[in-house]
Image (cartoon, rainbow, N blue to C red; front, top):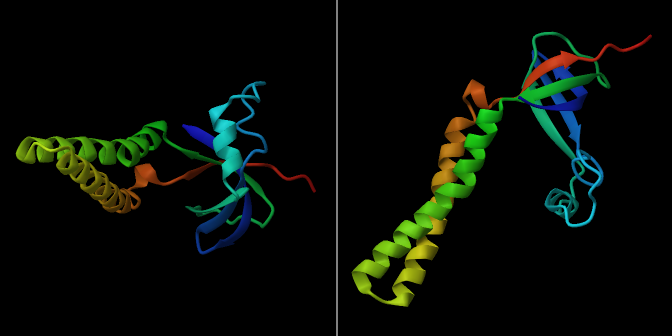
Length: 147
């Protein structure tokens, strides 16, 4: 389970709106700062927070901290879908076009068409998977607030 702490923004009729803040300077799991790919990618994004909507039957108050989780298998399948499907489509269509027309320009055109088609297929598949419970974040625990 991939876990992250979030802050409740609002709760209405069983749906909690949460804000997850991106850690400053990468994941914070190690002391390496130079040459870290995660840190570079983290610094590229302008958003320092992400908003989530999570089902929660228990009423929550704004400002409350909750731990949110998503199964690792779902995250890995999503990453494979987004990264591998366009790549495989690109390679397959480039090979087919190269085999049919025997020219580099046909292979390049096939590869471009394959990667675009692969991204479109990944987008459609992701839209279908987004509604499945295994791909939804869940609230694992609610922090106890002191009075």
